[in-house]
Image 1: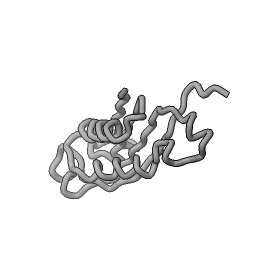
Image 2 (image 1 turned 90 degrees about the vertical axis):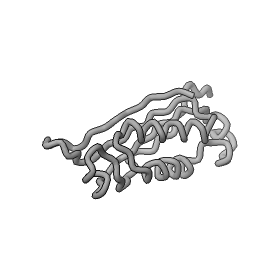
Image 3 (image 1 turned 60 degrees about the vertical axis):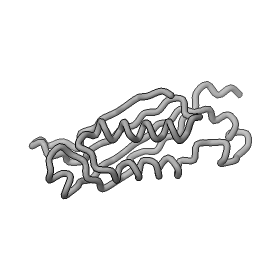
Image 4 (image 1 turned 60 degrees about the horizontal axis):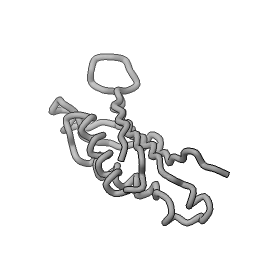
Length: 122
């Protein structure tokens, strides 16, 4: 068997955080969803069944949770911080997609959310 690409994905991690351009958003807060898609070589853990041979998704979650606690004006900034931390903490990750969705953004529109997506490489 030849693995041509392998990814670990964390879907719609839910956070209550304090990001936004308006002061009220940073004081009252709101609900956010964060998804990660990391491309990494999983051929070794496929064979060994050992957590130390893979990217621990609980550790990925901890990185995201830590960065979501730091208030920022822009989702772009939060996504950039998450990407830098993930790539710095997990050098075995080759590519990373970070998506952050602000649920119910205060923009006077009926929409499910507003998202920012970054695709980055190590």
